[in-house]
Image 1: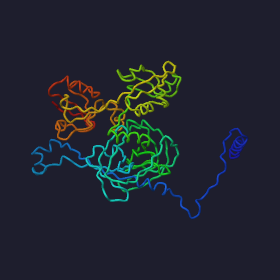
Image 2: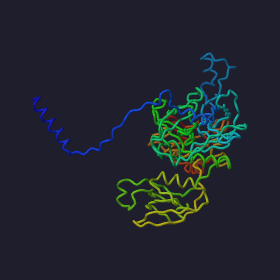
Image 3: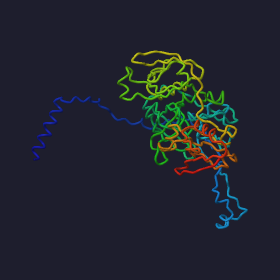
Length: 465
């Protein structure tokens, strides 16, 4: 038996040596050591960039909805709670993050989620214990970018690179304030570029890196081996809450465009085409000559696309001179163009390639504040449930409705019992799928009405006037 095994092995080895499989052999390599007495270090490369990354502390006063039972005198007496002792209805929520100084007079770029809803924002410079009070210049939830400003002069400012020139495998450093322990630097490489459909932001074109990004690093700098800013650290994918080697940064070219508009106008306006789009599936590729692009599934009435003559089934393959590979490319390309500007779209229809000029409109707000004088509850902010929100919050696919994104303290909505995160699923006999359904239901049922909500999987009913 042993002889047979040896014979088979010998024949196989001879077959490989005979050239039946041609492997591409790598040239011989030699191992080297750093020059004697010298330490390989990137300290000088990132020294200046580290001085431009600040620590941010944000405070937000959060209202607490106290169960009605706690206000009942019998309940308080039963649990030996003095009547003069009131339970606090407000608590302070604190968050830590990082920011990058981009102008010497105090403009700092960070993440929107670091300062979102904050009542106070404080900034500490590297190597200093002095705390500055910052004001929020503007924020953009769609890209998770915000700009804040402190009253300071002659600050060190970071050098800004070109994220379009990045390559997978480039060495990078993440600079920030992880877990609030103070300034620190972690090293990694660019793992991937152009990552989208992550479900974090509405506009996504992430740099993926394995440089450790942990809580507190958000808003900090991702720099290359020269110490040049290439991205703003934003998020991680993790099951434990700590870094698992999958971090995402917003490319600096997107950051520059958004931050400039926030500083100049206090807000960001996005171009709007008015189409529902999809990627090319393998089956769809069979019916188009072009194998990349964004397929139009629907065209909104009176939107720029409809006025220009675009139709369902058209495959958009280029915006001006920018090639479109998938639906995310089209969304990002159109969103980066200001409203009112005319663009040239190249598309395929019935296997023929055509071009058309379209004047973009202003992106309509998906958020609608429904105030009392408009027929609903004062102090309530509603938002349609987008795929990104559904994925981010973990809303099951079988739950339809609109989400309560904000409840103003002491407002009618607050007193009625609404809480952020509630999903309005039904008003009287009308099922709710979007904000427009809410408006229709309010007009249909005058006076007091029952509002059914889903709160963390439990169905509740509130009554509003």
